[in-house]
Length: 224
Image 1 (cartoon, rainbow, N blue to C red):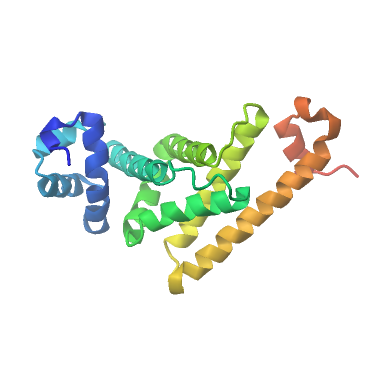
Image 2 (image 1 turned 30 degrees about the vertical axis):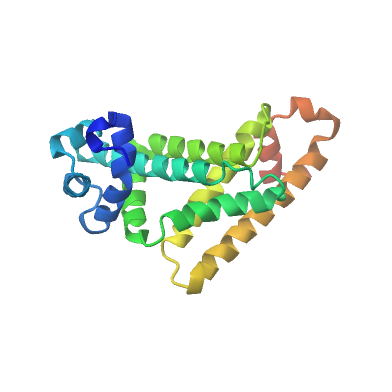
């Protein structure tokens, strides 16, 4: 294990993030949680604060949450770097990746709830969307997606919304083995598969000139 003093500030952010998340169950995403994580890691609190440089309590809270999300991203990428997803159907790849992320933060439902409260603040919404987009992009890349056209954007937007909705269910799910969340995720993925089929039928020969906004508008306001 690399000693804290040998880490760059970016590396230190990722090193501290899981411990900060643990402390956030009791202290919120606060300087107290950061100081607690630094003590556990044997890092000078002043140095730890340098790794989360945003000014103000909410700015630093978003820094810490972003590092937590990034640490889950990193763990996911390391876990599936062996190519085990290659022979799975696409829906199983996505289900596996999403569920791995949920299992990675098991026991931290309170920390997640507090994080989502911070993320929902008006000044943080843009950064929250960026976090979701980045994680969705990493999941699609691990799933083998190489699309560079409109599909690149629609897939990530849709998966980001599925993941966010599933997190919201998961954090309050007290069913055995999170069965309610599993069922919710399966329904959402099945809905996307139907959407993709409908989209393919809708596009026909105009696939290369597909207008996402126009398509969604027609779904919402079908022509008579």
